[in-house]
Image 1: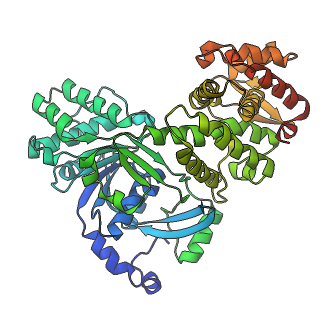
Image 2: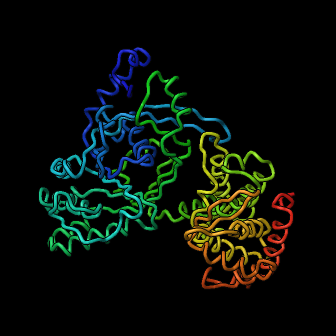
Image 3: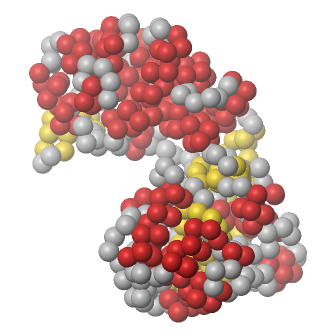
Length: 499
């Protein structure tokens, strides 16, 4: 049985639910959202629902679906309502909250309901467009804007905006705030450039292009909340037992939430849902939030994951339950990475953020597999951590001890002992694991060449400026420290390095 929001049983349990829903259901459709994924439902839709319940934003979301599922549509069957379970740790305290999100008014399938979407674009109520179409979705491709619908997301967006321009002309008050949430740097600027190019190629006119640039606000944004895919059957069953119903659209997220949006006063005046939750940050520049996340969360993951896995752990939570690994992670993050973030940030900013990240790592409800974090390990190490290493040496001229251990564990993890059909495999305690990294062939050859000389391997890899963009052997003491740790791991494992 799906979520029976208006069933007698549920209304008896929560008598205020029906009046609240009836009030919210009458709110105007202010938002078009491209995507139905769990991240959107667990973050932007969460903020909008919370604001609506507090009488602030007072607008609902029309969701654009790009694919049509076989069988019934759970959104239509459930009146576009879904259960959001929030589980985890916040400020060191356990959090357990379950709510029914009513932010979505309806879902429309672009391929068969494009005319209805055009009507929404022409509505005076529309103020915001949100997207999460994956990073591949924001690309410039050849598209036909008069198609029903255009093929690409930027093509669809351009067509919807042009429809709005046809109805309202160049009225700047009818421009909208457009917020992509795809994990790309400067995603708003990128999307704007593609939409403008579509407008030029389709010869939609100078007036439309001017309105795009002056009347609309393309806002780069950063989203950060762990919202796993479909919860396990065990978790789903336990929530259903407590709630008294099953929900085919159930999502679960951690308590932590951040949506940093680049914008000024006009954007703030439209995104009033930011007033009801400090997880929404609107600022002219959001680089600091990107740096904190990239270095403290992502960078710590990258420098710890190989060590955790070689220690014998399989998930982040399991790793944080081992005192030695938890201490390593904490000190790496707060003592080495935080002070060396290559951005103007002080301890009053990175320490509280780091402590939040540690709480997230300890979340017993999130099963984050270590092997998933190792995907494209080398590219992640280069992007997330090499700038931090450079900054550390600029400030200290000394070896970051835990950084060197984490880097050594990375090199040992990348030691492939076999290959098959272009796939490379390492060994942990006699069991194979796949090395899912584009640099796996490179490291396979390196380990084959230097199998009896770890120091030679470390020198060869660290001095490869083509791989890192810089000669890592140029940092005093770093090569020797990493080489010593690699040799120690190969001989005795990682545990002695954590004493």
